[in-house]
Image 1 (cartoon, rainbow, N blue to C red):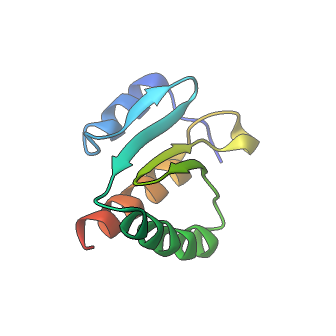
Image 2 (image 1 turned 90 degrees about the horizontal axis):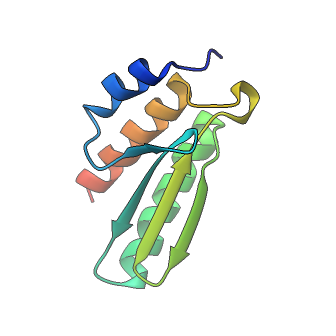
Image 3 (image 1 turned 60 degrees about the vertical axis):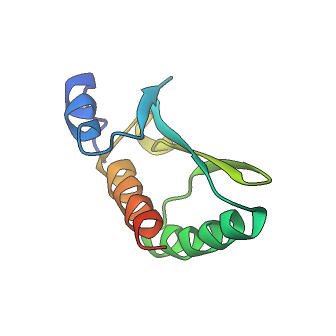
Amino acid sequence: MKKLSDSEIKKNLEQLPDWEFVDNAIETTLEFESFKDCFSIMTRIAFEVEAQNHHPEWFNVYNKLSIRLSTHDADGVTDKDFKLARTIEAIITNQ
């Protein structure tokens, strides 16, 4: 998997306004109404993560979920990260 250039990352982020490029990864923080709502989304994301065999770094406290994506084998952001980010956005949008 090819690591994307900064310009390729910037272009892809135009379609993901709630995500940003930070320290060689793309990341977002989401807030939900309750822990139950947050955990429910995490569970739905987990099934997609397994299906795509691409695992995020994520951190949850109560109703907040921070997600960070990078492809460790490529030492940076790849198309795999953007595919998973778009999947996560679709899950959040259709909750």
